[in-house]
Image (spheres, rainbow, N blue to C red):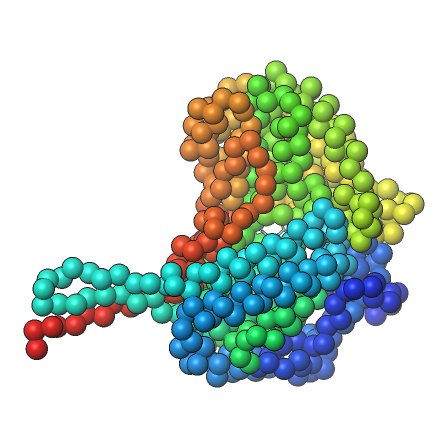
Length: 500
Ligand code: NAI
Ligand code: MG
């Protein structure tokens, strides 16, 4: 549940941020059937900044009914025309990207300059990418002989139920909306209770161009709103991004009705640094891969760093120098490199992990530690980039997804042992390899069990990549043409006897 409470101080909304008008059902802005609302908190100041409806089962039913009504006409819109609509949406997303970025920074605590602006622009790019793919929804002909015409069609699945998290809400929302709609589906999407405002802005932009009911966006809590959505009998496909724990709940709901499910879940991604990479570019890459400037609230954070023993101390010294030079502060301030953790629950969770590291005798704190208890940084959920050095990959901080800026550095000398430790995780989302020796780098990339390996860079996803997890990091791919085809269409074979 959201941490916002009635006693929380209210703050006037900062300039050029979006004001929610309700949630979007059937082309209308509505309150929840119960009238209940959720208070949205600015995690940089612990103040209330807005309210959104608190949707529950009745609202899910209304949204599914609106989507059902919209589906027959939408699926028959010529795919390229659907694509053109997405391209128009992309233009407005781009034009309003500063308002979008400021809204993201306000509600998530992600710094405007280093994070939120990039995310807002990426949302426009995602719509642009999928907007061009309408004609790629093509089928095949099957050579069954001269007297037979057999072909396949890529048909939409129907009403898609999507649930998204708060860490990059607009990017992750765009990744559901754009491919699902391009493929001719209709959507009921639940925004995360902690970060619904920018997603509602995206919905507001979309609904200017879409027929009513094609996209419905609900705001509500996990079990209370996401639960009925995942279990609704008319939802024909579930697409979820969030924790592995909730991913399992979604998959169980899908199993009950045999509906396809896409899951983009957690990670504990390894970074393997070879001895020849004890250089500034690799340190910058590690900072990027660890997503320190998003407080490491990223499923792809490279949070286990396997450092060769020959460079262990020198590399950590460089990392400390560069990381501690990053400025932590108000997410909306242009000067800030690093913002805040999303809410009090996640903040306490991150602090507990840091305390665990401090309490462990085998682990050595390299830099960082618990956040300050006084001063400007104590006003929000600010945490410090923190690195622990240890020999083991087997302790809690090296195994669990912390979703905060806590990096574990582990020493290695034997390459096979480094790769074994990298793979010793129930997650398998991303991985990073750092070396000038491209043969070594690629051999490691092929040996690592994860859906995405980057060699000598630590960037974020780009539309067009087939992105998704191995092992408990997920199921299915959504970021690409193949992702759209696999996740948001179903194939039908039509076989015609030409001999009559
Ligand atoms: P979460 O997985 O609980 O929330 C993600 C979304 O699922 C939200 O929209 C939430 O309302 C919804 N949800 C929660 N319970 C549900 C249920 N029973 N049925 C249907 N929908 C439900 O993530 P949370 O609690 O915000 O964060 C906890 C941890 O999850 C983090 O510390 C992090 O480790 C992980 N996480 C991973 C993300 C990723 O991108 N891989 C994103 C967010 C969280
Ligand atoms: Mg949860």
